Length: 106
Length: 118
Image: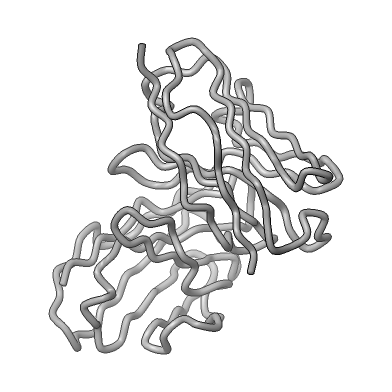
């Protein structure tokens, strides 16, 4: 199975700061990498699909990049409402797998 | 607007079978573009994909759970279900039902906590 390793596990940041979360896959997954935001006691919500495709309703400060094995989620100008745990997810090869999560504290 | 709602017991005894149902509203469960599935999250931990099913009945399972999992779909009732047998405390988790494309998972149900305890 493909292992996704996120870094860092935890990030403390201040409002308006730029935050970068990385996700590394144990083998190439092309662009089949998606990012989710999970706020406390809520279900995850998709932010970015296929590494870099933005989604309707997601603030433009969220962006994604990468392909192959290395991917990045960037949050430009962090806002208080962005406090959450962020997960990457690969849909290239079954079983689908998720990263361990990155908790962003503001 | 598509909504998914999990239902089922919140407490299951060890060695018994966990059974959950997800009811789909606001969209067709027979969409040719999507699968339906289950993902779980142990308390304070990460996400684990369990199983997916297509409206035609094609099924996909996580090998780590395959021997204990059965997923099924009832298109007439707009429901799909999960059964996990021989549960132990390690199966305690929030279980989410969700719509899956060949890519992302969206949307997710609100999740239901299932505790395995005697």
